[in-house]
Length: 100
Length: 211
Image 1 (tube, one colour):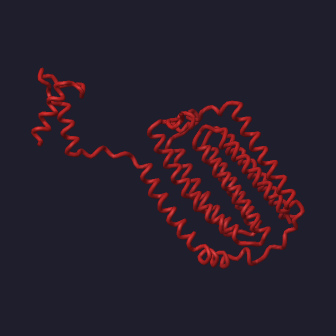
Image 2 (cartoon, chains in turn green, blue; image 1 turned 90 degrees about the horizontal axis):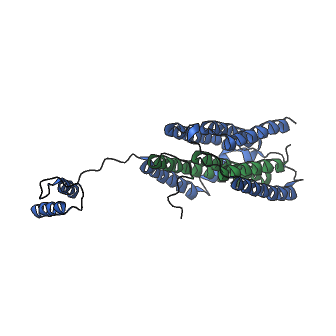
């Protein structure tokens, strides 16, 4: 039987990797992929707690997280397409119209 | 014992492919290794007694979301040359230090709280799809409907955002403005600047004619 702390630690590691990716990359798509990674590590945490506490709620929350992630991906990628059409790049350091 | 082996294999696979997602310079490779991460996590979900979530993970995440990513990456044709340099060393260091601190804090709290937690044997009730569905369409019915609404809004938003801008439909006012710009000035030449005096006179004449 694998201790639940291992799952939680794995989730924390994945979250940390995703954080580093979201903060250090400049390509918009890669940043977006890192955010998906962070979302998934949270899903792993939720399912682990669902197993530990023997409660189904964690799995249900994961279901909703999946749906919201799908919506987020659709809107985000549409934004990237719109940005690319105007700026010919999705390097987020060069998409700085709103920067003061 | 076999459970520990499966956990070790797929946890290592998930970590390695997550590193590739973050570190690889080509977004296509990043996207494909995200698929590996997601499927490894799906295996771990099965180990944790959530086979339905594992199936959803494979169907929705790798089947729909990642394909959407791949589609956009290839549509925009973001090759290697489009990828900028990584950020400066200071920002990179700060990100790594911050994520490391987060990891230490969270990991220590997990160890403190659950380091020795003994798992109860897997309950059939937790795995049952019927129970999940009953709760989803019972206690969480409103949330479920709201998520449906959210998806509808997202689809509309994505369509509006990504739609190509149509050529402007000529309206009556716009036609007049175009005609006014091309109206010959008093010197018989087509004025090039809209603020040209002859142009103003011409547009006034057109406006008067239209009125």
